[in-house]
Length: 397
Ligand SMILES: *Cc1c(COP(=O)(O)O)cnc(C)c1O
Image 1 (cartoon, rainbow, N blue to C red):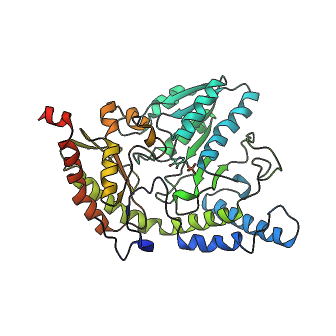
Image 2: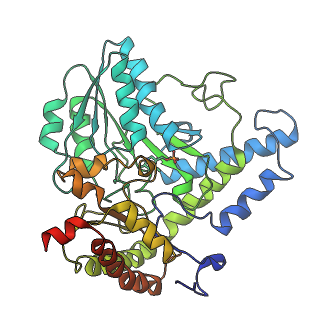
C-alpha cells in the first residue's frame, strides 16, 4: 500500500492520477477566493460600495483572463462550467443561425459528451449534424472536414485536446479551413489550457473550466468573438452582456483568473516535468504483454497516458489500483459508471472488447516521480492478477 510522501500536498495518501477528471484547488487560489466568500460578499450588480467592490474584482478578473486569451474583456462570458459553455456555444449559435436559414453543424466524433449530446439534441429539433471521423490516433481528418462544410453550415466544433486519450488536434489548420469557408469555429480547450500553448487568433469561440486547472468547481467561461452573435440560454437580469443572466460567482471567477495565471506561468516547467513522468508510464505499461497506447504517440498532452490491456476490464483495473492507493480512471469520468465502451476509443477503430479495457492515467502538478515508480511496479502485477481470473486469457494461452 502506498504510504504517501512528505512532498504530496496536504498529506494526501493517494497517488492521484485522475487530473483530467478534476484537480485539487491550489492554496493560492483558495487564498484569492476567500475574501469574496467572507467580508467582500457583495452582489456585483449592487450600487453600494460592497457591490462595487465585487464588481471591481469581477471586471479585473475578466480583463486579466481576456489578456491571457488574446481577447477583449467583453468577449469573456462567465458561466457555471464547461458543460454550460459548450451547450451555450452550440445552442446559442444554432438559434441565431436558424434566423439566417443555416441549420448544419459539424462536431468531431471524439468530443466530450456535453458537445455530442447537445449536437444530438439539436438534431432532434431539426438541425443537421455531421460527426467528423478521426484517424487511428484520434486526429480529425481535415479533408473530410473540408468536404463536410456546405452553404448551410454555421459551426465547426473540435476540441483542442481530447480528455480521454490526450490527442492534440490540428486547431490552426481547422481554424484556417473555417475562416476560408466563412464558418464559425468553436473549440473546447478545457484539457489543453495550461498544458500546451494555445493559438487562438482564428478561434471564434472557446470553452474553459476552472476545476481542471486547480481552480474551483462551478465556474467556466465561453470566449466569444464580438463579431459573432449568439442567443442566450439563460434569460433574466441581463448579466454578462445580456448573454448569461444569473448573479456572478465572484469568488469562483477570482479563483479562476488566479488559477489561469499560475497555470500559464508554470506551464513551461510543469509540462516538461509531467511529460517525463508520462513517458516513464508509457514505457513501462507497454512492456506488459498485449498492451497498447491509445492516442497519438507524439501529438499528445504532456499529462495524459491511456492504455488498453486485452483480457483485463478497465473498471476492474481501476478498482484494483484503488486498493493500492492509486486513483485512475477508465474512459472518461462521466461515462464510466455506465459501463459502455468509450465513444472515443470506438472512434479510433478499437473493437468494443479493447475499448472496455482502457486505463487513463492523467498527471498533475502534485505528482512526483517516486509515485510513478510505484505505479510502474504495481500496474503489471494488477494486470496479471486480473488476467489470471479471466477465462479468455486462459483460453488464449
Ligand atoms: C471536464 C471536461 C468538460 C466539462 O467541464 P465541466 O466544467 O466539468 O462541466 C468539457 N470538456 C472537456 C474536454 C472536459 O475535460
